[in-house]
Length: 498
Image 1 (spheres, one colour):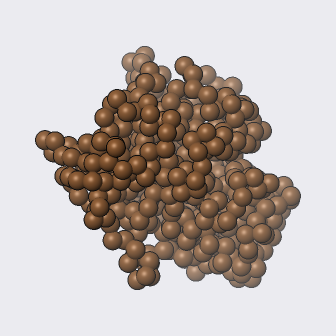
Image 2: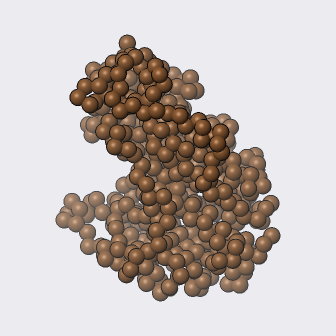
Image 3: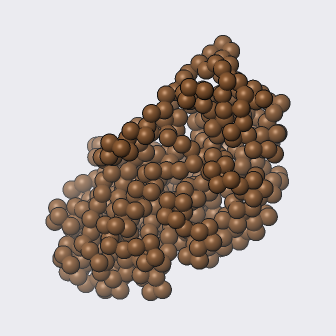
């Protein structure tokens, strides 16, 4: 194995609730805390001086002038690269893949990935008049890494498909119809999946909601669990209202040994893969029930690591909403009841969904799991926007079968791109069929808006609203495949089922 084999040497997570704190420190303070804790976790705090790169995951709850520079100053270090990412839950794994390649090639010795969110404290402080956080922290401008495109089109937003709670249900309902499940069967499957994830969160000391819930509690709507976007009640949605921070230090095996880091602390970054969906925006997708990019990054990362799916002892599938987990299971041919489970944290609904930084937590948890010795191989997946930007990585306890390798997913084959032949019609008229849909609820839990994606008889795709009077029926009956007619009134499409 190459002396520059990339290894995860230190990890740390922070949850102020677990630390019995009434309020979280501001994000930059939380990042400093986990950065130092990750260095201590290595058993060699001096590793901070070896950092050639410091990357801060894009913050949503607060904005600093230059977070990487501000953090570097607090740590008393001056890495050559100070990086800030674009928006995307894929970015922590993308950064691991990038830095692993840089380490393997000898360009850098070590790098740190760190992020924090303070939504819970920030939102409550705003009700009391605001926060006194240092927004001007950091001189100069950081290096920006990642795809900076927005996640939706003007047309999609016009019909209410703008936020995750409105968009992910479109994929979930399509997957239900694809598998031929009834609405009741589907609800039971979602409940079982989420209940299993909550059991993992209940044992996770860094989980925001370490509480085991039953499938019935998760699927039954109530004042505390109102329907958000059919078929997802609140407990199936990623919980962004958290205060959490995490850090990961990646270095070469040679540098780790030079610093005296024990071999038992090292977990190998065995491979990495990234991909962006061929149809970047949701209305451009070939279908709504599967993800070619999830399949690609999972298969490529396993192939490059020289391991098979049966070798993997544990997974952490990105889980902002259940459909993403389901698509990963479909892509890998996994049974819903696979005893290896789907998460090592408890997922974004229960462990917490700290903006773009969840996967820093999942990598940290995966490292701890592999260090414990029960499992030798772990697979982590990550995504950004709306099943749009993807990354995956294989991690091993002990040397992997092959040296680290990465697939950056920049080139799809001609046959793969040829599938993208969807024509989108802005003002649609005529006989049509529903391809997928959701019903978005108001803050009181009442059905408010029906979003329909459908096809005209010539195959062109449109997006439309549903009449309010049929919204309750759309949650009782299967409307995917339902025929009807779409018409444009003053520039707005409406679908009327037969």
